[in-house]
Image (tube, rainbow, N blue to C red; front, side, top):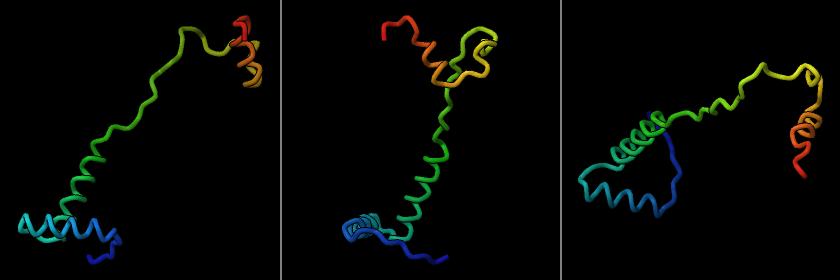
Length: 81
């Protein structure tokens, strides 16, 4: 498939130099680069948030309908802030 890619002139000239030095084509060099990036990104692990719960039975019954502001207020109660 043909496509158009806009890249900076300096990058193109550097890529052409590398292709010439390595006795390959610019097309082959671009394909190689794309394949490397694709493999690298596929191998990147997804971020997983660690479980940060505490032992217990969940929300205290008296806070079931409380707003986040009220819960935060109670969390910092008696901490001098």
